[in-house]
Length: 328
Image 1: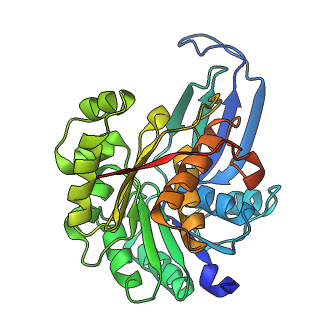
Image 2: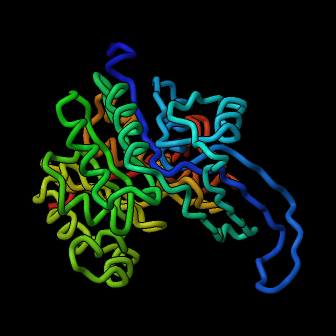
């Protein structure tokens, strides 16, 4: 049995949020007055979500946020599954961003995300130092989410370079300019990224709509080819999520595809974060790449089947076997 120190997962949320979810019992109509049937608030952000799933599955986790406020910390510590979040407190009365999610009965999700508070170069330096201080000896460090105003586009690449000598594996789950800059600026290999079809096309100059349409027909050859381009650029594992079509994993050992199990989608909030957590959980437990892909699909699908911002525990996973197919 691997000891807890070697199994520990560290997550870093660059732009944390308080997630407010409004649940509707009818379809959203623009310009109308609608009453929510349920309202929840929780400390969140992609790294925090990954940490919740990892912790609920029994692995030790250390949670770091670039900056936080008292309200965020209180929500994290008083949650049903409490988390202690490390990070500097925002000054001058500033607060973390509020992200609002509206979920409809058919699973349609609408998100309104604030930009978040701007961080100074000094605050960015403190955040990076806090992360590096707790990362040594961890099994994985997951850098996740959007960057806060004030952070350079290549901040994740700079952090990954600092982490590269600490013996931990590095996952990065981001999008937009931060994802472009990661590929353009990284000086050390990244162990895992999780693009969707649109992000994969963004990184490789492909056609996202064509990739998605082919995947819906069961043809993932274009996705595999594009993912192999990223592997050749120094990404050790490329996990491409394809929504209801499933996911593709490309590593130095090969390529695999797994279809998503039948899922009654209730909310897609946290599904991608749960997929990252599922992969990391399987990898820490020593499973092979195909099993890591199956675990990722299982956790991502379970998240989609749960209401609002609820994240999956092992009890929520489907009993159905997820078939993984090797691709030549």
